[in-house]
Amino acid sequence: MPNTRPTPQKISELVEEWRQKLIDLTLSLVKFRTETYVGVSLKGRPIPEGQLKSLNYLSSLFETLGLSVQTWETKVGYRCLVGVWKGSGGGRSLLFNGHMDTVPLGGVSAWTVNPW
Image 1 (cartoon, rainbow, N blue to C red):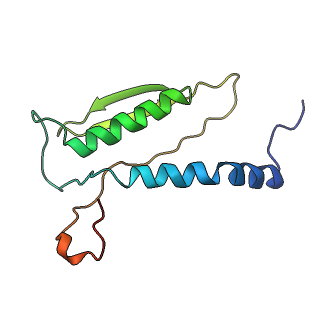
Image 2 (cartoon, rainbow, N blue to C red):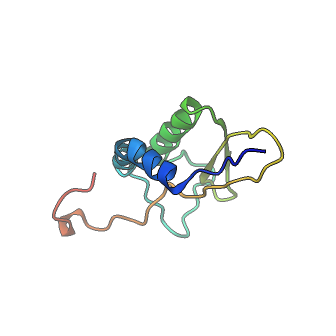
């Protein structure tokens, strides 16, 4: 069976190839206003606009990349998103986990640049 593990050189090449795409993705994501307030339930209320835009953006990106997409609502009304790439064969799985929300912004007057 051939060795399918990428070499450090191949990993470096892929990082360089994807560098600008990853920077652009990060810049797009931080523009969404996705503040979450601890202890505040969204149950029965519409999802906040920034969180919905972020969810839709990532859902679309995942689908473009060929992932199957699932979303669900937590007990207190927050939305979760999962993208799955099905593998082939009995190999190991890899999971990336993250979140789309941020802490509250605070007073915009305290910022030297408007973050939005």
